[in-house]
Amino acid sequence: MKALVTGGAGFIGSNLVDALLERSDEVTILDNLSTGRRENLESALANGAKLVEADLRDADAVRDIVAEAKPETIFHLAAQIDVRKSVADPAYDATVNVLGTINMLAAAQAAGVRRFINSSTGGAIYGEGRVIPAPETHPAEPESGYGQSKLAAEGYCGLFRRLHGLSTVSLRYGNVYGPRQDPLGEAGVIAIFCGKLNDGGKPLVFGDGLQTRDYVYVGDIVSANLAAADSDVGGSFNIGLGVQSTVLDIVDILRRLGGRDDFEAEHAPERSGEVLHIALDATRAREELGWEPKVQLEEGLERTLASITG
Image (cartoon, rainbow, N blue to C red):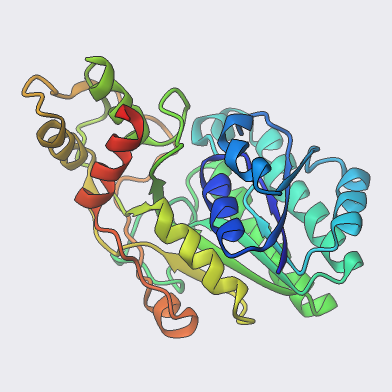
């Protein structure tokens, strides 16, 4: 298969690129390297992947790149993912997540791409969970610009499917974690906590730490993308474990795994725009994509910690 991965130098994208190359797929990576890292691609580039540096907001560049690459499948992972930034500057968030997605969809349509797989969010689209785990039919009431922009991007995927016959699907991820997530970044509490554990620091917890998330290992996200590529079903699919875990649960497991009795949470005021409780019902993904998660939280945390400590 010929594949194009946007955001392929990022945390999730680079893991997906490696999995595609392991299958001997031909891979083009589109990334502006604003948050993605070239070092994430060292192995991929050595094994034949092609990196093209460009910004999703440049419609002409995107169209030309897709036309030249001629991919059968586009995995669209590039995004602005910082919830706090999206609250402070929703217009910027929308230019990347909405306009950028529209540019990719238009380029895919023009180039005759067979399948377009859009990375979305379950944790931020639904807002506060009225039903937990939340099914795809749960009301969409985002509490941040990020969730709202991802919901709009999903809408455009549906529009291009109806209007132009482009085969699109949106995968609504839980809170993704695993190797290559940046412990110095703004997103990814597990990566940040692993970094603190490794360097002798303490985890900073916003609010009381009892907020819950559905933490899903990056390897399971990769397998969901591959399953979606092999299907033609449309719409939105939750990709998660369906289990609520608190931030303090993460602290406790890492304290045990790292053998640090002093790894205790330091608390700060809660942040605006963040959901308190959510988990995702992935029944539809299991039934229609044949996907289910393989890695439970403690095993995933152990793998993630090992990738940081070496």
